[in-house]
Length: 179
Image (cartoon, rainbow, N blue to C red; front, side, top):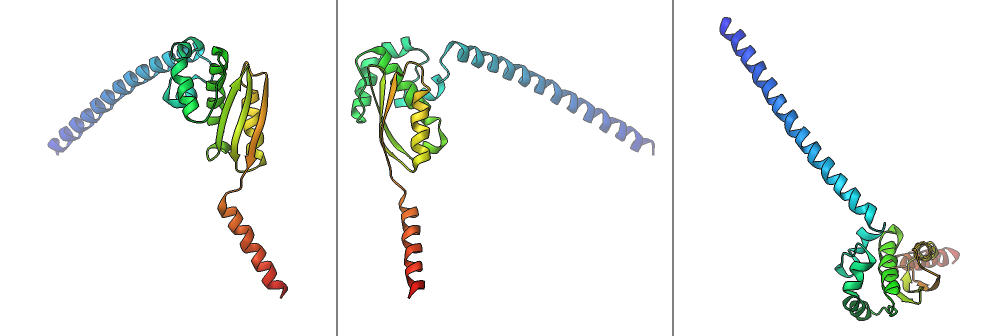
């Protein structure tokens, strides 16, 4: 019976040591995560609010207008290759990046095809969206970008083929019921 008591005490001590070891690792991770979050927040405070999504705009990561200015000619060429136009000023290019990022952040627009043209701080949206709500969401997102004077909405509403098929099927059923 004595050996069982000793084994129980040793087992309990081992569990306590293991728990203590896990606790110190998690504290280290918390400290590392806190430091990383602090650094990320510091970067976010110096950048524009749309700097993170802008990284997806033609695979570039511009944290400031100055960063964009260093590669503006390359960015303009990429935009042109995608069927978009960007005015000559750095402000137009920066607005283009911010509008593209704002549109990418709107959930309702993920399946939309939207081209963004910017000239003299005037944004023109071209392409197709699924419905009127998506069209309004795109226009609203573009209008909220700093520096945009106005937004010209040339978006077309194109319902997806599945909703058209459902409508045709419903109409066919209704006509069959009339007979």
